[in-house]
Length: 597
Image 1 (cartoon, rainbow, N blue to C red):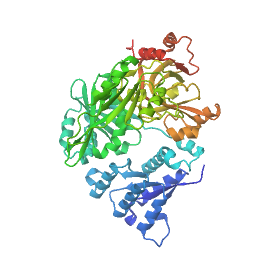
Image 2: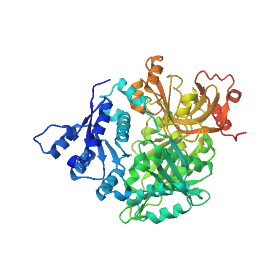
Image 3: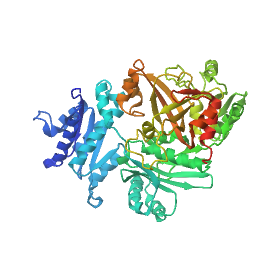
Image 4: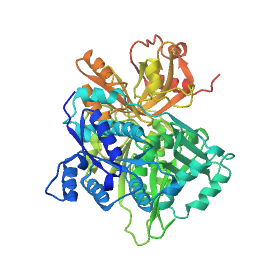
């Protein structure tokens, strides 16, 4: 194990020994990790500098700030928090539980400050505080490895940090009458952005055990998130509230519950869904919503508060299959006309448009955008051909086929390109049929499948060993048979004996070949059974591992067993990965989503 080299600044009120036991507990927890060393003002010898100046000097030299909050707060501690925020230091906050009736106004103020900025963890007692500090520091080192700690953490350190990584059990369910108080407490945390929310909350809670519009995400027995969904008509749905409590953040619960509601809406035939969010939290919520296909549609001024804006985001659900012959009309209709735009000059697969058609009063006329639409199997050739013509103008290249999935390909992250993976996400559950696009069938052992893609036939509480709650993930295997894959290619998971069936399918977003350390730097704990397993794969394949990043995983309604699979692909051998043609992939999808017999 490496010598301690990650420095952690411990901050709390220290007047008359207040929280001294908690500071000691936090320092012991930090020291137990071996990789980290605490800095605690109370442990330092006398210094010539003033206490405040000395503390800020040490904070600037530290990597992480740990805050311990009781029922008191002081200006020096707030100064440390402000300085940590200014310097971009990660803040790990631990808030002692006190009865709400006993909360001081100063505590409420700093909790509000934290709620708008960081995840914090509540604790009761020294032993729980130690556990929470260890877990939070481990997670910070893992999540921040690529951006902050790669030059100071070694493979042995990674192996140690990831060995005990786990995700808390998660259950998303319909709210019950017994949840009323917890749901009220959670929703009232939104009061700072929606001052008149109380009446709305009470109206929702009146029928909490009768309606199906309130769902909760329960983590380890406590409600960590609340979803309120309201149907405006048979096919239009508003996600009225999507809120994750600060104590539950950091485990990708937000993306999970958004995706679950999108999947539920698609199953029920919803045509349009939308959500609004306060401008102050848009930078956090918009990226989460974008992962599930929501795009900004406008800003409503003064909707809930004078002098404040509300973002409006929407998602269109498109059902059925889009073929090469349909694709141009699909792009013009879905991306221009339905978005409030107008086509100005139409040259077939090349056209110009203005988006949106209706601008704000007095605003400049919307900029002209050129679109190039490609329905071919190798869209990169069309992209290169048109780039020289349009790269000095506003343009978007839209392709039915995906960009090369291999991240080492020069066009993998080409600018101004919307491909099959992007369109499939934005207009889910649409199926884009690119006839020349290959897909990959991989074999996964049952124990790994249950962690990576748990079956709905298992108990509804996701097991603590689940690798990620988030909807996008990574599958690791030997580095072969990936060269023909594209973004949007299907990834089919065949679960080996005794299951012997394809359990479900996802869309590939990228593939990456590298050594275990490079894979970890790129994807963190996504898809990581344990770091040792990556090293085992690499050892048998010249030190390299293939990482396949995927999204929009869906479990089949009727798993495709081996005999049915062989009726589609004669002589299919589950002992190795198989590159399937577009025709085979379509047949597997039809079979997988047929009505269960």
